[in-house]
Image 1: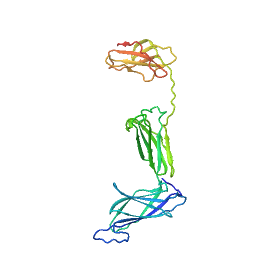
Image 2: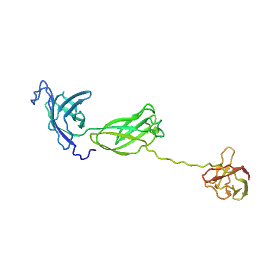
Image 3: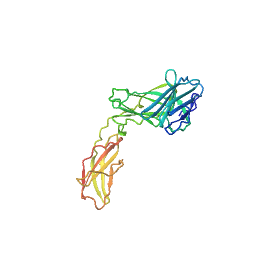
Image 4: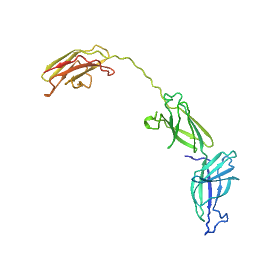
Length: 323
């Protein structure tokens, strides 16, 4: 994430951990009250001026803090803490109290009369990222009440009570390059309420700066054109001719420039709908309907013209075939 950087610092912190009980004599001249000594040395070129080191030692809601000066890139501190598991974090600040470098929280166990060597890597301090989601020109600007902001695998959620409240948030991230996207939602974060899948982009968070991201939904223009199409008139002169191999059906052509063919329908019972006999429109004006021995006692036939857009026109008057 951080890459090569001449301002990256490595902090070697010596944690000399001591504790005493009534049956144990301390093996260090520091103190007999379970002290924690932190020694640090900074190295690196071109770094901002660091004036203080903030040492934070925590366990749950219990926090012990110590602030010591950094002189000639070195500092030391002694903190009284009880025996047990603790989290140690070191923050380096400038003269204005702005954190320039920091370590990740590191777990350590303070035991009776036992020393440890803890090496911490300090990285540039977190970048403050201000995100504003501009939906003013978005077609769903009133429906967009929620947003999910993705930085790599981390997700930050924004919820606003109404469409008049800005969609914005501020988060802190370590400097580096991130894959970034925003997804908008309506009244919940369910997949069915998502307004769009979001588009991945790459953003770079520099060291020691605040970043302002003004994001707008990605939209594209949709051009729509159309014309009015009326239903084609029904074919006339539907004629049924019985043959040995079936029923020959003929009709007069529909004289219209949009006609591309004809659909023929048959109904074997008044209790059933008409069935399409030809899935592909017929260009000719005749059709031989072959039947097996189990054909109905009578069949109703209709024909309809089909337009270039696939619109089926009016049915012709039905004709009944009886053997």
